[in-house]
Image (cartoon, rainbow, N blue to C red; front, side, top):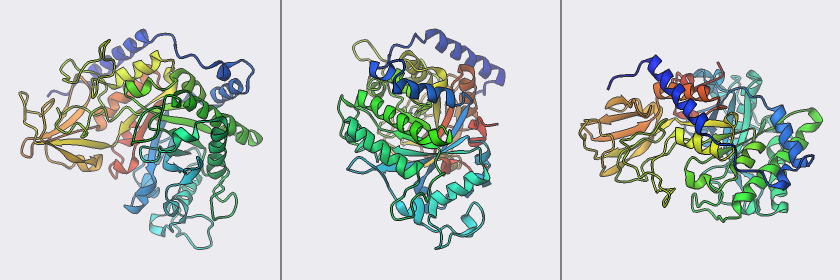
Amino acid sequence: MARPSQHHRNRRVGLAAAAVLSLAIVPVAAASPALATPGSAAASAAASASSASSNGKVSVGYFTQWGIYSGFYEKNLIASGAVKKLTEIDYAFSNIAPDGTCASADAWADWQKPVDAANSVDGTADTGAQSIAGNFNQLRELKKAYPNLKIVMAIGGWSESTNFSAAAATPASRAKFAQSCIDMYIKGNLPGVAPGAAAGIFDGISIDWEYPDGVGDNNPHGPQDTHNFTLLLQELRNQLDTAGRPDGKHYLLTADMPAGPENVSHIEIGAVSRILDWMNVMTFDFHGTWETTGPTNFQSNLFPSPFDPAPRATSSNPFPVNGEISTLQVVMNYLQHGATPNKIALSIPLYAHGWTGVAPGPRGDGLYQPATGVATDVVYNQVAAQPGTVHHDPITGAVYKYDPASKTFWTYDDPQSIQEKVLFIKALGLRGDMAWSMDGDTADGALVNAFGLAK
């Protein structure tokens, strides 16, 4: 398949961005009066967030708590050059305890595990005299070496969203949750160590509730989650502003937001976007191995395709299961529901989904073909080494790999497809990008060098 020229890619992305802006309607998701009354504490907090946060581009890289067990340390971000391309590191994840408070999912990895000199950012080994070690101390060292880098604690995730619905349920539970998270991660009061030992590491909080009024990983949920999510974010914004006021510091508040229109429909997008500094919209996992027999398709395509066999939305079925979806359509949906471009950051996968038993099909590349099974997910630095031919689809901007010998099909992002997304972000005036997760990149940072907007 012929590779489109840079001029062609720029023109196509520019035309698509213009189309999005022309189709985006006036925001329809008005904030609740309790959140938007002029002169109210909520309005003051929203104004503070808007004025205190920069409208500059962001490039957020997720660093996983558990990477420390497989040999991926904060120091790797220096070796790959990633730290110079990122504006922010989101640390995954904090848990939510059954009582609705923030709690570590793994205290050993977070602040107890000694890091040896070879893997330490500053080249010195942790000692027993330190109040904290582990990832938290390495993040502190990284921030000291790169003072413009922001470090944000991400709360929740797919496996840790069980208790969000209960934590958001009442004014008291929301205040308790926010206070506990700020006490632990902003004020640095970790259990079992000296008060304030972790102060100054984290510059904010990111909420990854998967999903409000959505089952997610078999989580408790209900229709009350829709407005309670907005109220939970507002409570966090208010308490973060209070915490930062003595020192004149603006603590970041972001959220990882769903791409699927069904999940989006259960969120007050307009109100939420006005509270947050920005939203990391999870524009990946559009298709994948949960579709066990295929057809093969893209997990993070930029544009739709008329050849996509996935069901189209209709008036009688606006949210078809495993329906047609693209990054372009996701952004349009957010704009139409009240978000502004500078509150949207696109998410980029640093991993691949795959199918097995895939016939070549009429084009010989396995695209849109049925499968007999699925392949185990791999990260980019592994899929790049897999056998097969790499294809760049000129319609969707997506990349895929097909190996006719093993009949294996992979969907992922590579530097070329990411560069096209960066063009889209800039053309539309979006806030930036987020990547999950940094341990999937190559040792020389091939992907972060493509998506990093901090250049």
